[in-house]
Every structure is written in C-alpha cells, then in structure tokens.
Image (cartoon, rainbow, N blue to C red; front, side, top):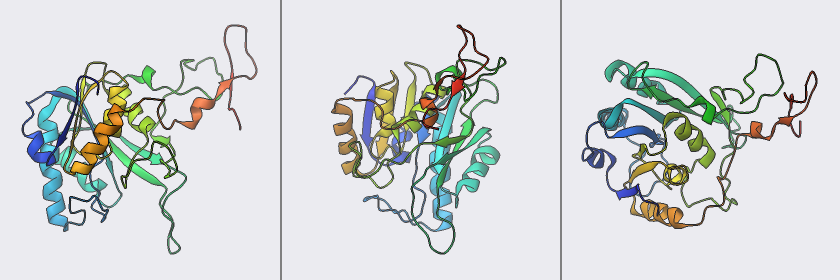
Length: 271
C-alpha cells in the first residue's frame, strides 16, 4: 500500500473523534442511505429520529476535522438528502456550493412508478469563499468550437454521467453500493491538491482510497465491517490498470469548421 493511506475498521463517529481538529482537507463519502441495504455489520433501516441522530453525529465530526478551506461531498438518496442539506446549512453553518446529479443508464427496475436513474451528491464548503476548486483538473472537451470557449475544456456542470460498476466488471468488489472510480476522481481532483488528506468515514470497498492512492493524496478510510476493510486493503495492494470508468464526453475529439491550423473545433466521437 502507498504511504499516506490508512484503513481503519471501526465505528465512523468513534474513529473520527480520534482525529485532530482541522486535519482533513476534504471529506468524500457515501454513507448508508437508510434504505435497508445489507452492509453486513450495520442497521440500514433505522427509524427516522435515530437516522437523524446518526447523521448529525458524523456530520458534526466531519466539520470539526475539516481545515478552514476544506470541503465535503456526500452521496445521498432522495428520501433523506433534503434533511442532510438542512443539517449542513442551518445547523452546522456550512456553505452550499452544488447539488450534483449522478445520472446512470442502468438501475433497479419498477413497473409501478418510474425506475430510478440517478443519485445525488451534496457539495458544501466550510468557508463561503476560501476553498479549493481546481477547475482545470476536471474540465471536459468542448462539443463545439467557439472563439470565446476555453479550449482547455468546459466545466463539467452539475449533471454527471458515469456508468455503474457492473457485476461482470473486473473491478467489481463484493459490495452492494460500489461507486465508479472516475466519479470519485472528479471530486478529489477538483477539491484537493497533491499531498492533501482526504477522509472517507464510510469507505466500503475502498474506491475513494484507491483514487487517492493513484492521485498523490493522503487518505483515511473508515468502515465498521471488517470484511470491507480487508477488501479495501486487498484492492490497494493490487496492480493499477487505470480507473474503471470515465465521463463519455472525454471521447470528444477535434474536428469541425471555422478552424485554423492552430485552433481545433470539436465534434463528438461516435455521435
């Protein structure tokens, strides 16, 4: 395992309390959604009050350990995301930046009602103005050339398309809610710098830690399930062959009209 990557088996709140104040540059995490998923070691079907108490506890610790210019990204399902928003903004005094929608093409099917095809991610900062955001690190190629465009690429916006990690994928681990590596990569590149420390208090299969390992970040991952921490350690020790997903817009290549020898135009490959 790379230096600077720590994997801890334990309760998220208890372990976060051991971390010093203002020691974490970025929190990126996918906590339990309280929808009855089988995580093996925890109750993912709490009553409402218990789930709110749990959420307040870990979010309070997350704010405490963040540096003054730190940020937090939280995955959450639609049933509870508005409550977490209120805790972050109204109770903890953090600053809303973006509500990101992760759109995917495959998901659970329904015959009475519409099948879900997205998850949401809240992006909050500890300070309104002083926070890391490396836009150039996460730009995507422009679809068309216009003279006013930044030819380094466009802001990816707040609707992201990444495929699920399918069960036949060689990167798939035995975890019920594994997320794509490139999804975490965008958040980590945008909101931290090389050498920074990233915390994932619900690290599951270790996706966030694998991304930090391959992007020169330090990382601390916590999970209460010893099977998952063992899985993460195995994943970190394995060979790296590239991230397991990407934004489809990366496939755009130069072409078009009104171009010169110096300035390309863009077309979308396989359009």
